[in-house]
Image (cartoon, rainbow, N blue to C red; front, top):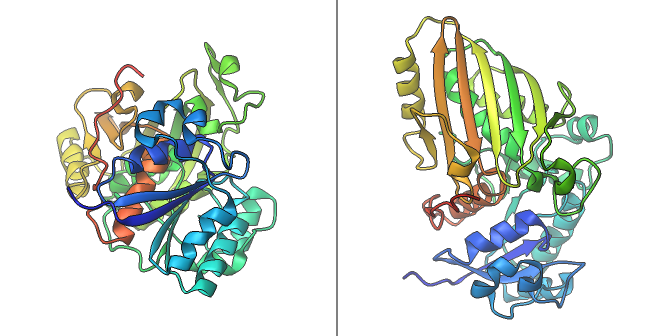
Length: 354
């Protein structure tokens, strides 16, 4: 077995995404979790918050910011994941980056919040309606999906897109790149309750969601511009009519995507082109049968299924919001930053019947 000798720090350690990160990292052959930082739970056993991780963590405790930052004095290269809430990540990462530079320590950063998904503060503020916490860092971060073909970003600072964006962009980018579909695309997507975070709120708390289903922020959801920006790597900027829904399950996103065909290609040719587009990644699978969120629960997989009917193309895209849509995609990027195969530590079986 390779040596687990590369130090990793996780910020925002008591949230759902951080818990999923820890689940993946304890199985990684190279990454060694040196600190899981939580302001609210510092000093408490991590397994108290995440009992399902107890067999792998023993008595390891959450660290404070100060304890985490002590690692910077080692002057080793450190991988830093931010699982902090949107709006909080920017200022905290700015502090860690400044502290690392002062200590002469190299940081490789993967942010899983929305704070570094735009290249300028004005674009961020137009969507999130508040000032950006670290505008001086925006041009140092690159936002991209690790499964989309293309050169690796030339930076040590990566922002991973969100779960809705991952599901939709993986589905539509190859179709736009090949010129199969018109850029005006309709998306109806359903997300599980873990996507709303750990803190219960009206409309997101699972007992309220159980047995129910409803749309929210139709045609004006804050992640819609992020999807359109990322899909533009295809060479064509899409215009999405995006309607998200709160689903009555915990893990997963199911996106139903309807496109108008621009060219009269048969279904087999379209499917073959999408398979070829993702030939370089093991994590996007084009299926012949309709996927379910249960198929991908706990995995880093995206399952796609396509059907042509007349001049319309339908695509189902299914991911686990916590894994593929956040922690797993983040680990893919950290693998790339350390020059490992992006699949390292992520070829894991699903949970089954979750």
